Length: 298
Ligand code: ADP
Figure 1 (cartoon, helix red, strand yellow):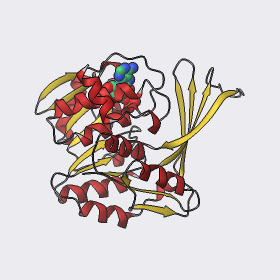
Figure 2: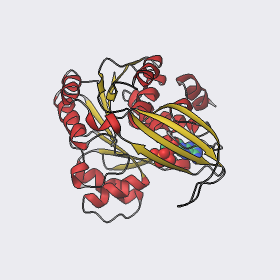
Figure 3: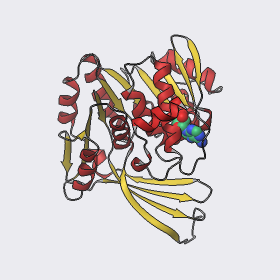
């Protein structure tokens, strides 16, 4: 069973020829709304991967119903999704014809998660359960979740995204840290390490934090560091049209595959991430388990 404690957003994606420069006004071809937020995306990915999933988070009392409904439609348990006086979190995603994106996030209700709900959800976990955290809610809440889940015997996966900026953003009691290259550099710097390339950095960060580390490398797949050894996992060659939620798809699939050997779980995650970049949108781009297995068998 996978429990995600994290963000839920209403995404608006705008497709345009080129991203606007400061002071410039541009026209978008179309606007599309969907469920987003790193927490929700990862919950959807884990559910599509076949896991039983619970989402712990907060949405607005007035505008949160469609978001809760979208999660429930994916078979994600939303009993611990609390309703806040603040509006739901929002993300504005600008995507240009070259596949470049710029994203603005307004945290809203995500900044006000209910600590009691988090504590209850995490104290309830047992060995074999997986807790998944990101960095789109207050770090103090993630730290509380990790400590509580770890004491209950669950495995804790921390996707340190967006990149942490202060030492206080670092989460302890983590079994597996998942980062992209940019986030890896940020974590290394916060630990007082001088970034020296992904291979060296995963080893140094793993030693400091006492965790295993997976660094995603975009089209180049992922680098796994466990028990003092590096393993590289390739991603299939695809035509990328929108990289939004590739990392979230990767993390959700990895969490759902936790019972497998880590390199096998990462292979599934890399396949799922690659399929996600071939489609537009955040949650809508996340592939199903059947699609991922088809890709792995090809
Ligand atoms: P993030 O979106 O968090 O920066 P990455 O870009 O590293 O994360 O992508 C996460 C995973 O998605 C990669 O490990 C890989 O498996 C897959 N992926 C991303 N971009 C591509 C691509 N262009 N081709 C194939 N796979 C990709």
